[in-house]
Length: 215
Image (cartoon, rainbow, N blue to C red):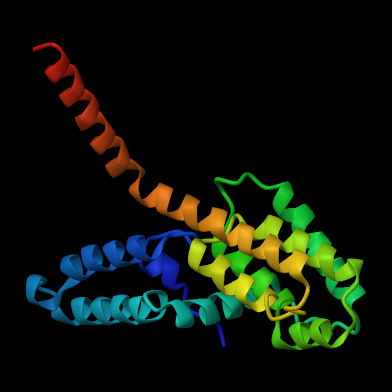
């Protein structure tokens, strides 16, 4: 069954943020609302289509599931065989790390990256890593993955770090690396979110200082 392209329906790229999804829905819902269109049949159909797209893309869990299905359909790929060892997982991790390193950080499809990381950190792979003895292979997997995590949204990065923290939690060095990454990711997240406000507050204080100094 061919999936509907919900991104095209809402006229947004697959990398759109949740806020951009919401804005696109509101704009189109207002435009195609049946009460504002003389052709009621067309408006009803279009409005229903827009609502259907938003019901999926506006929900994080449903959007992730949709993106997974969309990826497999568009790429024409089948499920890969399960990893049999930590070395198999390291191989996939290394490929992803090199793939991400070669991308323009401003043009990365973050939903696709989240899908790729989620596939590597599947429940099967987490159990496999947890049940095997902790080695340098585990350390490399954690290190390579954190390099890819930095391009995820903070919420997705936090979720993936949580999965890795379940792998041999007694290994202090690896836990420290994951906690440090999460700390810096959180700082960067709030800086990106509030930098304009911080800059505005600083500017106000500078202007106030200059004004008071000149009196």
